[in-house]
Image (cartoon, rainbow, N blue to C red):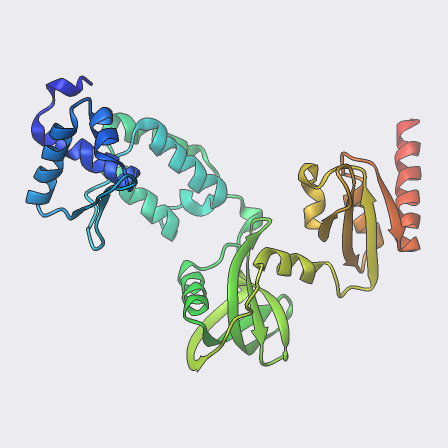
Length: 317
């Protein structure tokens, strides 16, 4: 596309897109991106303002243009790469987005309908070849429930929730919702349960009802939701686990599912966890690419020994 051949209206729309994508962009930089002088760039900003678009300018060395609050964005425009990237991200992170009846799928439908044909066709083709993972059915939280939890966290309002516990009877809990976080593909609510008088980590997909209550609360002053959730999973089971892994923290991925990771030095990491099933834990540890040493418990060392003997026997034929 040759910028010089575009009409003033088209250039003004390009200026709007640049300002939206780069809040605080200077007049000089805007002119460079448009291939025009600073004066011409100001003229296009003037066209946008005449059209009722609130372009705010801040003077000074570090000033620039940005879109004012309350402006409703025009219809979105995607390149082919952007549209396919969005489809891939949505389908990878939420496989039911391939289902038009799912809220995420419905949103993708609306996007595809307004895309130009050369962009829409490959996007729709990609959507058709993605198959939802039926094994994960039921682990995706209800979007409306998730939104209600997030809003309660933001407003610091107490909630009364209905909650299912696997095969056990559902319960009703009064909670102070602190944060909603995602860990290992699952959504969790970190909260204080007044029903249990204890901190709790609840699966969002198991929350069946939400009722906003009048009471407010003060969340913890220092709160790291992910660390708190990992600490929760690292304790409370029969066997306390301590393992030293011969790898730096940044290189360990799989072990993050097993408990809390603490850096020891540049080449070693401590794994703190707990389990009721040493055999299962041994199997998971054996999947690590790095070597490791079990500090405790002896039951885990015995489980690893048994697993190792079984693997050696299989390798001997």
